[in-house]
Structure formats: C-alpha cells, structure tokens
Length: 239
Image 1 (cartoon, rainbow, N blue to C red):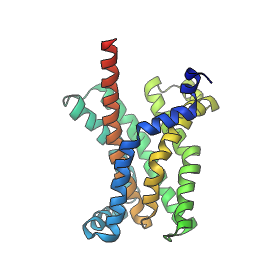
Image 2 (tube, helix red, strand yellow):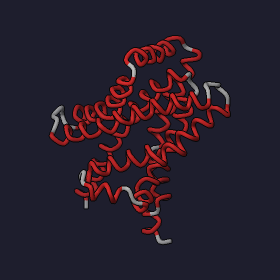
Image 3 (cartoon, one colour):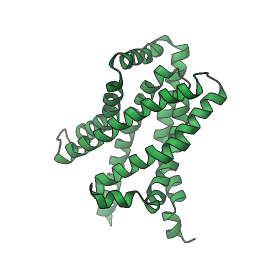
Image 4 (spheres, one colour):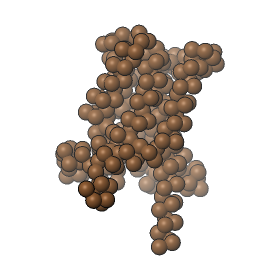
C-alpha cells in the first residue's frame, strides 16, 4: 500500500483523527470522571447533577431537546462568534445554528430514550456486566447503525448542500466506508470512557452528564477547528 493509499484508508484516517483528539478527549474524560467521583464522594458535585436531574424530571422531554441544542449547537456557534469573529455573527453562523439545532434536538430525544430503554432492559445495577453491556450497545450498535451515520451525514450535508442527490450518495456503503468509519474510530477513542462514566451514574443522572460532556466536547472541537484553519491559512501564505 502506497503512502497516498494509506492516507485514504478509513482505518488510517480514523486513527489519525483519534490521535489528533487525544488531548481534548483526555480533558473531557477527566472532567467526567471527576463529576462521577464527585457525585459519590463530594456533596456539591452531587447537588449539581441532582439539580439537573430534577430539572429534567420537571420539564420532561423538552429538557432533552433544549439541553442538547444548547450544548451541541448554540454554545459552539456562540463560541466561534465571540472568540473568533470579533462578536460579529454572519448568515453562515445562523444557517449552521439552525441546521445543527435540528440535528441535536432530535438526537437529544433519541439519546434520552436510549438511556431509559437500557435502564429498562438491563437494570441499574452498578456492576461490570451491566455497565459493559450498556456501553457496548451504545457505542458498538447504536453508534455505528444510527448516531454515527446521522451525525456524519448531517455535517457533510452542511458543507455540500442539502439535496436529495447528496442524501442518496450519503446513504451508500462507499460514503459509510470513507466517512462514517473514520468518525466512528475517532469517536470511540474519546466517547467509550465518557459513556462508561455516564453509565456509572443512576439513570436519572445519565442524560445530564451526557449533556455536560457534549458541551465541553463541542467547545473544544470548535477551538481545535479554528486553530487548524489558522494553521492551514498560514501554510498557504508561506507557500
């Protein structure tokens, strides 16, 4: 396999992306572990998660929609506008905000239902078998067969345009191999430990912790993405 072929290999692309995300992934993982440990051993941390859980119980499903929209769509876009665009929003920001809000609002509902179903199917025992089963179904069934496909395709369509032809191309094995598999590999390196931390909490607290993880992760990716664009721009100027 030539160097050029290797760099288009889905496994190589995924591992390269995973390596690039090691530091931000470790940051979010450390925060999640600290919150889980804090829930069991530090009362203020437990109060934070219990407060979010109570709010979720009072509001119901709209909490899942609003919290994931804020975490996955509003905060990252606001972060870009405030820190990278001098506080000046553009039409592009509004377009991205609107379209990603649809995605994350729907994903919030799906993830909330997934956590409830896993609690019903497997129970809430805090033992290795129960937690490992939930993590495996979440990351190696739900993610490859649904979440990974939807998220990758949606962000791809943000770039190439929302047309039926682009959707059709996105629902092929070639797109899955070239785009979804690398995303899955990179995702597993970060989210398997995070999801494990999520399932180490009682079911009512799982979605609030997922929302916090998504918030930190989305902001870090916005920062990294901006830094990569700046480096690429600098390289072009020097060439």
